[in-house]
Length: 433
Image (tube, rainbow, N blue to C red; front, side):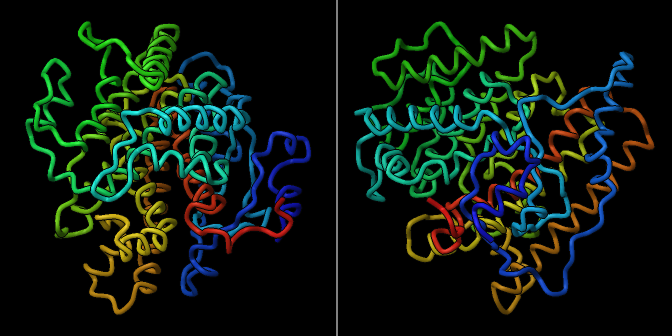
């Protein structure tokens, strides 16, 4: 497999000009699990034929064929010969990936240069250092890829704003994993989450950095302090643009996305153990920012879908499970190495939990069992979609959201496969410049 062979087979020839170049192919299942095969899912035909969008058109009584946006192209990882660890075969890629890269670079430059992010912490790393490390890397081969494949339908403006909030999620998450957040007092947490309270003199450096991100992302209150740094100006501008998009669209998708981002930042530390997989998944949904991912999906679509719709509850629970487990499989080897070498303080991964719960003899056995669990989730998703079709009770926005979230799941697997963050240089394709 080469860069050229992937390019020639990943999309139609017409869409090659829009491709985000693929230079890595991480086979995180090491050739696959011998006794597992990808399940045949009827949802693949429905995706291919855009039948969820047809149902959306029928539901809004327009009689029109609802289309996916022209901001994205179809991509075909199996045809390109890439390792593929899901039975969901339809993938999409946003055309505005250069906007994502440039926006990410600008925000990282401000984070690296801002004085308030440069203090060293007990792990020996600051937000500024983490940001500079990303700038020094091949930026476009890392987590900058996530919005391009998870939220492909966004227009150029929404894609830019999704890239901005993506920076905060990943930089802050890397910082969070390096620190013992149990040292932050409950009073300090209250001061962060409720900006009208003043921070105590004893507030930790961790809290100060958390405040740098969170306080300016709350709903626009009269007592938000004026920006004092270029970084604060940039954050304020991005937040205001998100609210501006909401006002122009007549919905609250951007506000909900920001609220879910703040919820992710303020999540508790992990428990010392999990009594069962359900216990783990409920925590992992929050730790993997899956509610935030759903909020981003809604924002990218300019949708008014109710994320708490009881009609979608079972389906969205399965989506959360899938995103969490698939991400854990892709990131497992990287996270295990980081934990073993003391680079992070927490091991929060389904593979580790499966090994512990089932008392398995090896981590390779745990990877296999976790992959089997992911495929079982896909079978349940397929069954739930068939049930929803038979019930015929969803509105047009809900059908559009199902179409989009299926691409979130496949996009999540795609990014784990083609970025350098998880597999590293040994999975670089030949022919890479």
